[in-house]
Length: 288
Ligand code: GUN
Image (cartoon, rainbow, N blue to C red; front, side):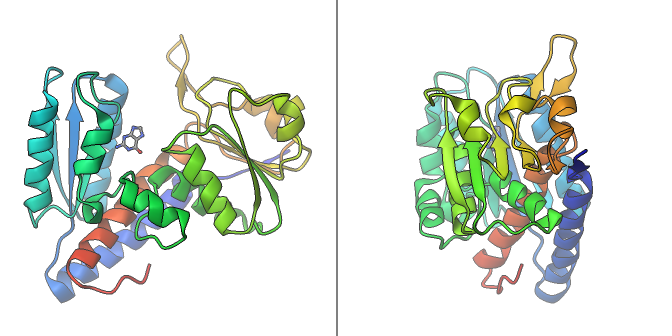
């Protein structure tokens, strides 16, 4: 039976560390980090995420600024807001919640955010830095997964790592972070032939597919570490991951639950990135 990787506990530890560092930053340097969160339209899931981000800011002692724009906002209006936030020295981090409505090109928005304030690490300049291992920020979800893996005490170097999903937000950066830790990494996707034969090789399996209960026990090696990035809403309203939790936990050595696994980590890492941004922008040495 797999041991549970407790994302609530690990995220609480990260947030507590950020809170203490923030207190010091205020006392010694008179700086309070600020995060601006922009949401366009009325997507209910995005609304929940944004509220959780605001709550986390309060917990760690940041200022948070919310900009809730109507569904019909034009790209020019959103870019103008981003420019204003880029120029505002009280704002250290800028996050535009994705997805944005179809009249807005998300790439144009990401490109407009100053790379120093890009706490999602979505800007091409930051993506390039991740590629060469010389980064200021890591994208929040993959960074959170790395913290969860570290909490198991299991060494990544030399392990077979399989990532299912190749999105820019999770799959691709996830593969790169595992590679930086000397894992042997394979990225699978919708065109992968005989997916189970690949996933069964994995010592560390990360599922970021977006399909409920997609990873079944027959796809998992005995004793694997299984990380579930999925967050799927079932018809009965229940949240469910990409991994068939009951059957896979009978085979894995470690597994993340949904909810309470990767989800809380994403927000904790956003707090850490915002603190890093505030320190860097004020010339304070970052030692996290
Ligand atoms: N939508 C889903 N996940 C994310 C995220 O990590 N950042 C932003 N900005 N939007 C998202």
